[in-house]
Length: 635
Picture 1 (cartoon, rainbow, N blue to C red):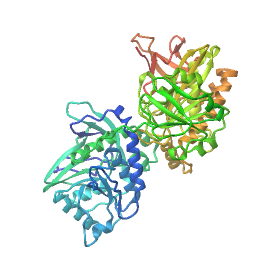
Picture 2 (cartoon, rainbow, N blue to C red):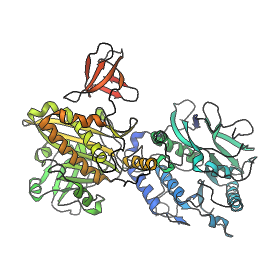
Picture 3 (spheres, helix red, strand yellow):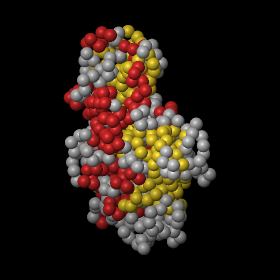
Picture 4 (tube, rainbow, N blue to C red):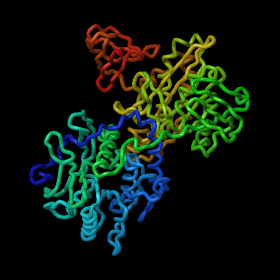
C-alpha cells in the first residue's frame, strides 16, 4: 500500500476518498463582499495570462506605491499551460497588479552558471509535470533547497512539492519523483478556520505518489490532514531560516484547468471553487504573503450609459427622469459626465461604441426579434440594472417597447427575497421592460418561467449545443444538471394607468468561471467528454438569442396560453416526477408527495402520496431545495 508518513507516525492511503482539515485562524471571507470585487480579480487574471510568453516572462505593472513590487516566482517545469493556470489562481487571491509581480522561472535560468532568480523573491511556487532529465531535475531542486535554507519561502504542489521537500526534510526515498495527471484523485477536504469555528467542506484533486513511502525528519508540522485517519496532506517544513509548504492537495488547479473527464468529479470541484480559493489564501498567509478574497480592492467606478436606439425613440427621451437612480439623457458624450449612486448620465446613440467592451456587431447580427432588445442601454459598471428601471416610474412610462439595460459588472445586483446576485464580468446581466395590459395581470407570475425557458433555449437551440445540460429549477433558477446554479430570473411589476409595468431581470453565468461555474466551463467539459469541438459563447450572442426566444415564447403564450409553452418548460426542468416532502404553511409536519407540474399561474403542483390530493405551492411563500427534495414554507 502506498503511503506518505511524517516521522514514521502517519500514512496516506491514496486510493481512498476522505476529508482534510486545514487549520488557520481567520474565517473565510463573506461571499457577499465578493460581489464588489470580482471584476478586478478577473481583470488581473486576464492581464496575467495576456502578459505571458514562453521562457523568461514577467508582468511588471507600475504601482504608485512601489514601482518594483517583489516577485512571486513560479516554476512549472516549463509548462506554459500550468503557468497560466497558477497565474489565474494567484490573481484571484492577491493583488498581482501592484503588490506583487508574477515571474515565470525557466529551467535554463536555474541551470545556467549565473543564477540571479532568487533576488527580490517573496515566494517560490513549484508545480506541474516533471519534464527534465533526472540530473537536471536534481540540480533544479537543489537550487530551490538552497533558496529556502537561505531564508526563502516556497509552496510546492503535488509531486513537485515532494521534489522540493526532498531537499529540506530528509525524505527516505529517491530525491526526485515523477507523476502524470492521471494519478490525481478527487478527495473531500474540510477547511477549519479555527478549532472552535465551523468547518467548510469541499473537494480537491490530490496527487497519488508512485513511490511506496516518504518520511520526514526535522522541523515539520502538519497543516492539513485527512479527517477519518488524521493522515497529512499539507505540511509545513522549516529549514534554517526558510519555510516551505508541501501540498499533495492540488488547490492550485481550478476544475476546468484540470482536464477532468468525469462529470461527477467536475461538478464536485466546481461546487468547491470558492472554498478552494479560501484554502489557497490560507496557504499564502502561512508563508507571509498578503492575500485575501477581498484584497484591498476598491469597488469599480460606476460608468455612464449608452442607449442605442432609433432617432424617433431618442426624441422621446430628453431631459432628466428622477428616481432612486435618476437618469439624464444627452445627445453627445461631453466632458464632465459622471455616474454616481444617485445619477446615471446616458448618451443617446445609434450603436454601442466598440471601445466600451460590448461587441455590438455580434449582438445586432444575432438579434432577430421585432421589438425586444431593439432599444439597448449598455452600462459597463452599474449598481443594478433592475433598480435603474423598476424604481423610476417616470422613466418606465416613457420607455419604448422592449427596452433593455445590460451591464458588464453590477455592484449591487438583486435576486429574489433581497438576495444578492454576484455579478462579475463575463456574467450576462440584463433587465428588460414590458408593459402588460390589465387583462393579462393574472399571468404576470408566469413571466419568470418564460424567461427561464428563453435563457436555456438561447443555448440549447444552437446547432451542436442541444445536449449541453442546462436545466430549469422552479421557480426561477437556471441550473447545470441538478446541482450547480448558473443563473436566475427576477420579475417585478407595478400598476400604472390601467396597465402593469413589468421588469424582468436575468443574471446568467456565461463566461465567468468564478465564483462557481459558467456556461463556457460546461461547454469545455462537454467537449472533453465527447470529443466534439464547440465554440465558447459570448454574452452578446447569448443575450441576443435570449431576446429572440423570449419574444417568440411570449407571443405563443399570449395567444394560446400556457399549453403552448409547457412542453418546452417540462423538457428542461429538473423536477419531473420528483419525490418531495412539503409543508402546509407553518405546520411543521412534512408530507410526502410527488411533483406533477405547474398550474396556469406558474405555481408548483404536488400530489399528496397518501390522499392523492393536488396541493398548489406559490413561489413567494415557499422555498424549494431540489437536492433534498424539500419544499418549505418561508415565514
